[in-house]
Length: 79
Image 1 (cartoon, rainbow, N blue to C red):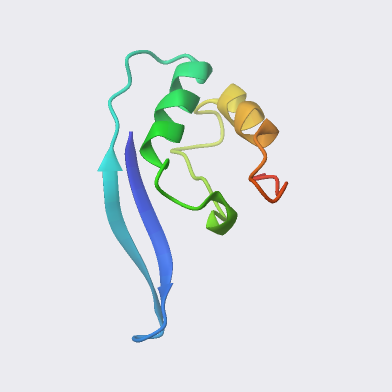
Image 2 (tube, one colour; image 1 turned 90 degrees about the vertical axis):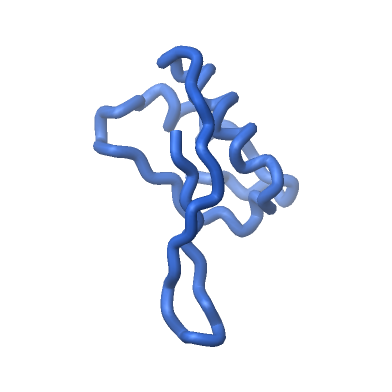
């Protein structure tokens, strides 16, 4: 799983995308994908996370259900 960060660059006034990390999946179950994802973004402030994208609408719907249940420290739902 590749983790890319898209952010607004105030200096150049454009949206930029940067590679953050790659996480290797030991399985394809939604709970394992969620654990891998959380490990990959653990150093980021979840209150600034706006979007999680996947390769398509049916990649892993259970992952979307699980990530929707997570609340940030400010009780802001990710989905």
